[in-house]
Image 1: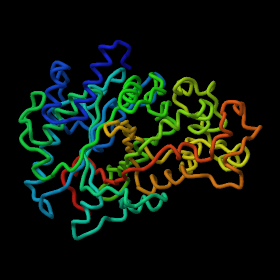
Image 2: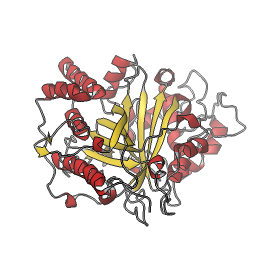
Image 3: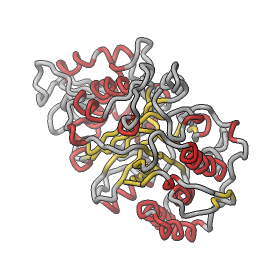
Image 4: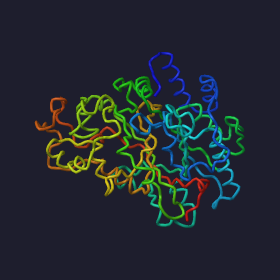
Amino acid sequence: MRKHGSERGLTRRGLLRAALAVGSTAGLSACMEITGGLDVPTGPSDLSTYPASQHAWNDALVTDSHGNTVAPHYQLLLFLEYKGSIPPTEAERAAVESCLASVDRAFQRGTGGSPDALSLNGLLGLIGYTPDYFARFDRSFTTEVDLSTPEQVLKAVGEDESKADHYDAVALLTSDRVEVLLAAEQAMRGNRDQLNGVPVSSSLTDVFAIAARRTGFKGPGLVSSRLSDEVDIDAVNEQSPSAMGYKSGFSDNQASEKRVTIKTGPFAGGTTLHVSELVLDLEAWYNRSEGDRVHRMFSPQHSPESVGEVGRFLANDSRINETIAQSTEADAEQYGVVGHTQKVARARDSNFEPRILRRSEAISAETGRAALNFTSIQRAMTDFVETRQAMSFVDTDADSDHTTPQCPAHQQSTSNGCPAKNGILQFVETEHRANFLVPQRQRRALPEPQ
């Protein structure tokens, strides 16, 4: 990980974040002036060496000293509206594929496959398509694809259905280099005829309109400094990679890429993608004691001493086992507290394996509030729905605000009574939700339902 500390370094990072938030050719020019231009290895000319699955990123992500994959520092989401023919013409498909292939060739895939890489200097991306896009066709999916509408997801998890997003597609791009994201975006917008020395002959805007864009950042120093600058939250530990203070994405609570990949049918090798924007009430979160936050994030069996600063003592293991997961209701009744990680573990499969893979989590503060751009991939949208349902309030006869002397080791750590039974849920409000099918690489250009 990069080290932080100098005022000059903080200023440079602030300028890069601002350039990403602004986008546009002006933002790219400002970014290139800061970084000295694009100095990134290109990808191969023969893309057949790339994985068949767009979402197979793990071998090209940075891995920390404990074996956890590390989400890239910067994220860009481009939401697209389709303006082409139904069914798409071969020329339209060729334009989309040529654009995506040019971007693939322009930048190495993530770390370039280096197991010792400390930074993701290249690019990782994918494109996915919504139920709205597929509804344009006169036939439906086969039963091998489970792709719910966002309204169905929102209803299933008890949220306002008006939060549903209705685009046709999304391009998700991630990197540790802002200039890489911005240059790729401008190529996709049709504003560059070459990218890192690679010719670009078509753009996504040949057949799509870019309806919206979201950006985000994650990582030690990045989150704390931006939230301090933009939303006046100074409580985030500088070493924390996330807004709520603890690292996430432990190896034990992430699904494998195999687990989230569609097994059969015409979209075998693909996956489904969920994208949500969640507003975080960080002021209320950090008004809780450290012990309270640990209980809510993990479980009442966890303590600040066992978790360590920003969760570093947990290494690659959240220490949520089947016993702790099965004790959720009992803990709620006995202690008045259950943890987010504890609750979500109840949705694991029969082998106690997670069912979703959090692919890219990034904080946004452009609107003057802290928001989380959350993306996950899963074989079926029911996997996401059941995982999200497990986050919800644990209903027992216990009073959620009572103080319980049996609360293990930490009853003295909160001045507001024992923590509530909803984990972190009361600090998270859904702003947007959308679902996508991410086809296998060979079908990524304007697929049709089959």
